[in-house]
Image (spheres, rainbow, N blue to C red):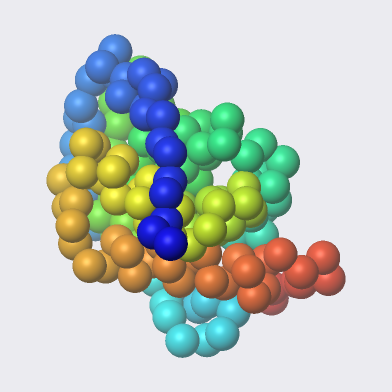
Length: 164
């Protein structure tokens, strides 16, 4: 049977009241850290103190209604925009070096929220097609998938503690 996923893209995902970013940062932020995934196979830059277990827990707690506030543009785990600190009325920065962290967080959150991997990829791909300047980049899907799988294998375990 074919996979059927129903998606409701509502207005909170596209918020035209917020202006575009005021600067594109070409530098790694001063507080960046290198994150190694729990299986040790993938590394990428993250803001200092990033905890993907908390991303998973937020997905579990807030589910579908919290997706945009968590991993949408300027969400709590949208590390590539203002290091996950939300929208700033006095100016916003985009950190390309945190793109992998943001996409990985999408997979982790969606797993916590109870979405299947195929469902996660469909939803994230549609959002990216509407909102992302790098929609269709294979790295996006790779990081969503990696985040989702790591959430299933590591972050979902109640006794999981990742030592940085």
